Image 1 (cartoon, rainbow over the protein chains, first blue to last red):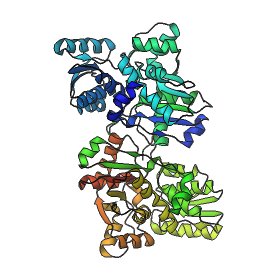
Image 2: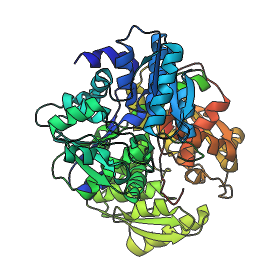
Image 3: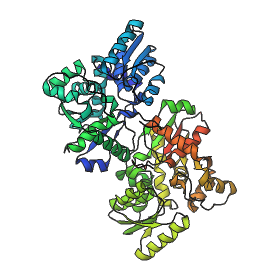
Image 4: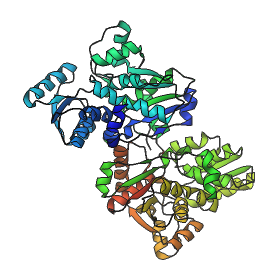
Length: 293
Length: 293
């Protein structure tokens, strides 16, 4: 896949971790793909690098609850370009600090999808920046798909890959990149279950009120992402807020890794749906600071 | 080295993690050997497996603030033997739970070295168990040394390896196993600085009052360990309690890993002593639960 070789020089091949205690809980071997160890702290570095690597623009811009913002800032800096990131005012301090570390300009906005998009449009008018959407962009989708390429090479026996669904960048990328015989399974917070509902109804749904603790999954499914996931027939499991927190604590005590709530969503779903085949779980990011989430 | 091949089947080769932010802080590339991902949650599985693999006894016993206890319980279970672990009443709930998970019998005792040893002697009288000391045992020392063998193979460019000194099992094992051109550097909490003082005075010192937050490092340096470290001339840096906590928080936010305070001690020392050569840091364990350390 072209994306993989394009972005490899600026990325870690992240390790896969396992836990006997967790295998016993699930009833099958579980392989955790640790993207919280990825450059910028999440898998989003993959899509951002792939998109920035294919544009001629000198200034790139986006809206992001945080991880894509840091990823685009990093990708732009590596390519000698300028990045401008529209950040909801309710994004965690950890995520904003992570964006500014890579020398991007940040612009605040309200918590809804409309707030993000109108503010971003303003930035583009002002600067002529090229928008790199967090997920509704085929270059970003191809970049996120390299998670699947890497994981299926690291663990050839894998039969399923469980991952969280927010805007759908990771899910659609992994669906496209999945080798034969590897099934992708999605998971969403009940409080942000627009993708599950939209795929069930056959019609993309608006964003739900941004209330879930899994702040990386509040966005609505993107148009391109919806199309890919609909044609694939993605199965999406829903989990409650307390299931997300419990799964996060379990991951931290058994795997000894820091995961943000969004990262714990597919594992929370897997715990309710024991599998008997070797299963991969993508841990997407680990935003954390001593002062909390 | 014999120990390495003896114990390999029951161990993970733990990954080495890096962080650009940390490299910038230190001024040199820093390679973190992640033993919190080791079976039983710490490097102590190495020494315990090596000792149990060489004994004919059916029952093994030890005293431990936790990690060695879990390691011996695990090693005994893997070998089809029974383990009995004497645990100070002030050991963290996480550590005790970790011991009992591997089906060992636990026996409580007071917080001092004398309390541990008298209670263990009682257990031996009662059961005829063979004692596997947490650190003052050449089989254990050889097992812990495999951390150095693995790390220097994973990162051939490494010039120094910084590690915490408690009873001295890890330090003496790594000193013995260090390839030419790799220098071992020790670190201790000021509140448990018996090893630094003993090596300076040329005489082994008694345990200090068990007050440091780095509860894995409260024990006094062992006799065999003192001998090895004295002949090597180990340099030991001291760090304060707040330096330990700050280093622990920094590791968690930059590396996205869970480390117990004892694990953060050598990194806390390194932060005060910038190096300009590629340096390895052993992260020894990650006892953690949602209810705190």
